[in-house]
Length: 168
Image (cartoon, rainbow, N blue to C red; front, side, top):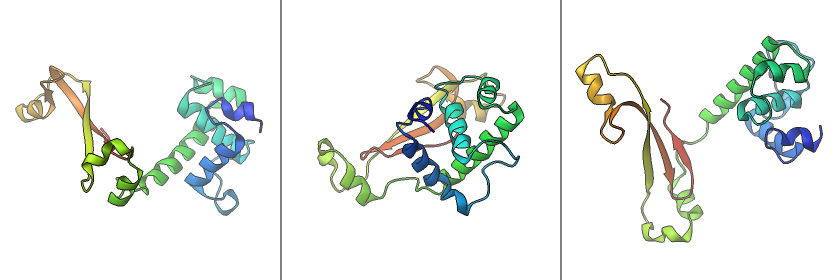
């Protein structure tokens, strides 16, 4: 695998792609294959396909991505889905927030005024929706800031830079 191939989805080297795969899945020889269907793709080609599709830097359509790897669209989708499940499972094991000690140690000097405090800055995103069918739902969805009904997802950052996302 060349540097140019792994740079398409944004990795600087094959080693960086391998480190990402190992962080999520562990050593490949100790684990079952990343795909439910047999494919002609190597272990790292599967991870490269996943990265190209999820980051959308080189291929916008799955059919084009499958063609570039010489596999069918259903096989490409199966490879992508199986690795996405590994990534989601791995992410669910990570801590939701940085510990107080990590937050205190990793924060920049400009945040020293908050020493001894655990600060988390929250923001709510808004995706506009139709009017709700019930009054209680209308109250829950209405945002004065956005001037209408919107779904709200929480996004937060700790002083050390740790990001938190509440799913929709």
